[in-house]
Image (cartoon, rainbow, N blue to C red; front, side, top):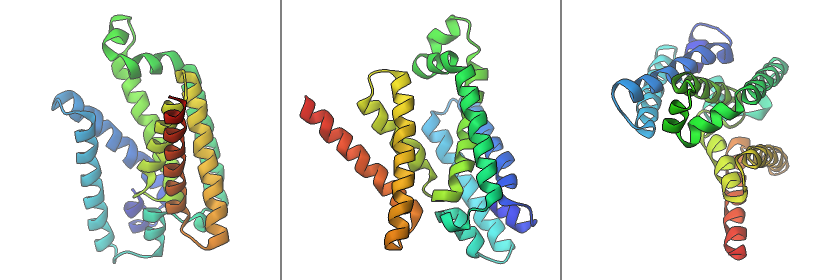
Length: 218
């Protein structure tokens, strides 16, 4: 999506949203039609996306500073328009999670039971993938496409190790994510380090501390 945006002189964020949504839809279809596990489907779509992106970048004249800022993140390159767009999209994601909270929990923990209970699991899975896709677009400018999966996974893993309920895990995951981003930006500015890598490493530190605290508590 970023490569297409740079190739056709379209704002990369706008070009990325439909591409990422299409990729999410492709993951669902691979899981349904080809009977693949989620990890395998994600790996296939991710590999295809990176390969196509490299080809498009090559056609467009090679890698440039703009493309690298999307691949590895660059907080200094974030514009006012991107901040506003991210705020609006984040609000939309939070509202949707609030509206479909119980359905999302049911499908996440036991899809078969949710289906028996009358929940439209296919629609909820589609919604979950679309929300994840939008979150990827929001985060890629900060930490980059190559590290965005870590920013999505690590706070959630840390939260589930520390939380006692799904609701508290959501709040803890958000808190860990915000803490790592703010601290990572501060450290990167202070020590002239790449923001994306610093944020991811801080998330790893948080996860290690949570594991250690949990082990000490028995």
